[in-house]
Image (cartoon, rainbow, N blue to C red):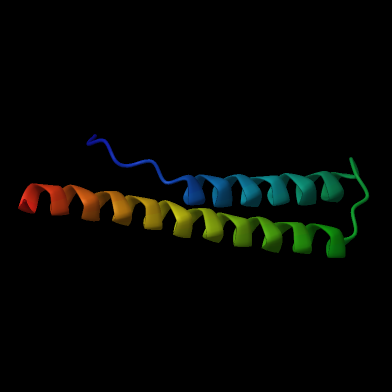
Length: 74
């Protein structure tokens, strides 16, 4: 398999959704008593944080790519 670049935003989104699934599983089995209005905002907040991390990662990589191409043009 070819190596691919690390994408922290996608990693964070996956971890947030896994955590939400585990919380709902615990609630369904009786291991925890969590109201739905607690899990939903945490999930939405985590996904917003993942989007922000993804945008920052994209901006940093675009800036780095532009600097490399500018230095090779000289």
